[in-house]
Length: 309
Image (cartoon, rainbow, N blue to C red; front, side, top):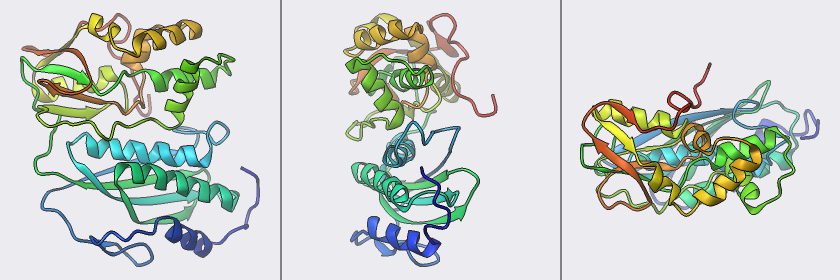
């Protein structure tokens, strides 16, 4: 981003955002531009908040504003989906340094709008402030009849992933190392780190527990095990048989990174992890009586993303 301090005013930014996020959804009685939004609510609403900080969750020298907008919106959307809910609304608060070009802000907003449209989200308000770094905080709202939590897994359930994890971590490794690997797998990994692909069509009907992989598969699996008071036993052979495994393994060898660390300890894939019977996606194990996680590859038992660590 070029240094053009003072090149825009708050009013100009808000006016442009009102245009980008305009919506004709009849449930929105009052949208962007007033002190608060007013919507016609569902009986059971699902809400989540997520924050992304420049230098921690994204870098502007790696990603375009459009990619950053998509990435942060995807993280919030996945949290709604992870409750078995339908996404409805999005509130977006942005801290800007004041040195951004207006075109970059528009690019960011268009990325948010693009991912929001994929998710079925309507941006109905937010806030803007000056900040030392770019900070984006979002609150997503959805609705459901019955929420699917992390606490419903039971012995006999299968363990399912909506797709294979590890791509985002591989993309981060490529960017950090300034790798010259130029395979289709490398391009996919970088793309998944910058703007993860969310499976908005994943049908969680019948799932006994559900969550999204934001920190790491090992961490989220343990959360389900702890919440449900059961054990999750992974079947590595089933993971190896998945369609994407060979491609990811080839890339992991190029990077000289253990593929199991990418799959189990890599975060920010926002793949859905579910338990139940005959669910879509990849069957990767089973729920059994006991506690904790069983059959994890060596070295990944306690690996994953944690803030302040």
